[in-house]
Image (cartoon, rainbow, N blue to C red; front, side):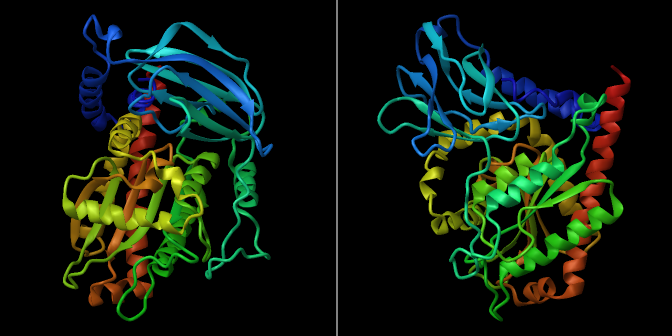
Length: 428
């Protein structure tokens, strides 16, 4: 698969061997087929067509299939500005047809890679928001393509639209205009530079998140820590910091990932606080995208994903079934090792520098991580259900300790990443 290999030669030196082993296992499990594999088990793509949306907001690309496919990836925003989608276990039919592109897409290509079909879209001028979903009336896959972010209203804490606030579209537009690199002679080298870090304060607005016995709200704690992390990054590293929210407002899980992608993010850190029925539960956890391996990880994932009940378009997440979760994780495998390295560094800083109890690095299928096409982690700062930890997270000192731990981990990650990038460039 294209998307699982394109960063392998830019990892820090100590991660290359593990990355190579992981890639070998991945290729052996996904790309090697029996000689007669084309005869059975693969669905055929007959046509790719485009049509204007009924609401006038962009176009819909239709992937015509003669049978339903088990899974396909969500659109992935690549470093070169293209958008990639993988249809797993499928093949191009002999009489396939590719219609001319419309709307915000300048050109596209469709390639058979192993037993998967990879579709690469090249946007025209300006950012493009892409979302994929199944057509209920056929076997086809539909990809919605809009030339600007959807006009999603920013919600006040009571869940009503805040008339005095800008829409998320406005916010995204400003982020994109400020963050997209301008063409220069060294643009190709610069696209690999870790220059934009997205800090995501979980929950917000009508979504309070977890609540402590004393009334401390998760959305307030994580916003305060997120701001401090961003401040430390801006003061000490030469990076652009983008916040998915910088105040108390509600933003969808998909909207957070879209914002990170459109801002050209190279790293995504989502900050949360935990809760459990047992008030004795304590400690930090850091997750990267994958299948949960314990009931505890599943419970954390379900609690964080439950936010979709507050969204007006919760059906957009209906395709995140078990098979899609597996395939999306594999499609994002180019970032998995990097995400794991950052998660390990964060937990090390929590335990050895901030004096917190670390519950370790874990994997789970958080919706907010699916949307971010970059190395990404979700951090649980501690348990608000534990009175002692709630008091620590509520205090200025506690928030400073937690934020500085995350900052130091990002700084270490960036240092190793930059070193690996320098070695890679010097060996060209």
